[in-house]
Length: 189
Image 1: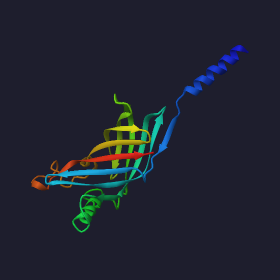
Image 2 (image 1 turned 60 degrees about the horizontal axis):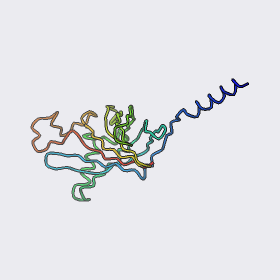
Image 3 (image 1 turned 180 degrees about the vertical axis):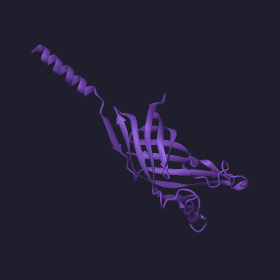
Image 4 (image 1 turned 45 degrees about the vertical axis):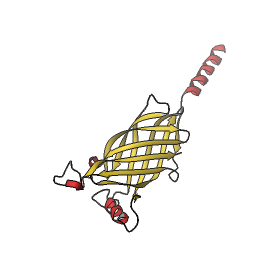
């Protein structure tokens, strides 16, 4: 009888110490993604909306995540209506860039998450899919309370977006657009 009680207590302690993963849904309406793209003669900035997403935690440590971005929501914020805003937004939605009529979403899925030396900050390698092309990206994400922040640098040419790229075309002169663009992401969950 004593052995049975000891086994039952040991089993209870073991089961209670196993960390259960907890998925936290990201509030897409309170989260924000801003972008910055540079070219030889300047830069443009804007926003794109998160459609849905979640972060996975185990014992309060980030272990995973997945997100869907609504590509049709690309907005330019550095130009005013009637002063090039609509033209640039149309071009970004075209096949030259994101082809949003055909490719309505982009997806990001965490593959590895490792804690860094900074408390609450993690190094993430994720699969990013744009225009049905998947390529890995690596970035740091900082989690504090119910907010996570990350800056993600994306090489657009890895997703078939070569328009204006000096890596693929000669004689572009001052029309060269940088291959990389930055996303600043703030997630609320």
